[in-house]
Image (tube, rainbow, N blue to C red; front, side, top):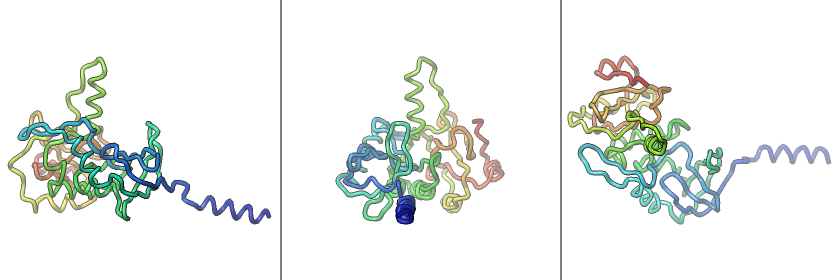
Length: 246
């Protein structure tokens, strides 16, 4: 009997305790679903807030958050998902990786430019975002503030203090002198090239961010607008970019 009890306990420990939730998808927004009665925050991706507006110096503001929710609903509303729970976030939502018909939902949303890789929580979709940026898919076709920067700006506006004006990841200024595709494509596809070359909206300055800096995870790169990835700080400086102060 003792041997049976020990064997049963071992089998239970070997089972994936984080399996599920599984069920029909109800889309809340671009990175949050309700599945089988559970609110699921998709792991390692970040989509625009529902009320977020996007645009740049050469295009009018548009409701990108609402558009992302609509596109995500068109892809997944009412479909059956299988998920693996990884964590619980500060709002009590289940953080999970989900698949539909065997395809990773987070990867598809990032690959199609409907969400960004949330590198602060994992590098799972780093290459998917780089591919979307190269091809100008979805949100990468226009200027967009990162969702994290947008939330930070909203929090700042709600406080009775002067909001920070430099977020480190803002709507980008379009640079028409975009380098030839062959010059930046290798870096975009190389997962070891993690330095982000961002163009400041206010002054048009070329600034690079390295992993670990304050605004690194919030900074979005649009190669089609003159921004790019670098494999080393020497390479970035040689190309005329300066290091971010934060």
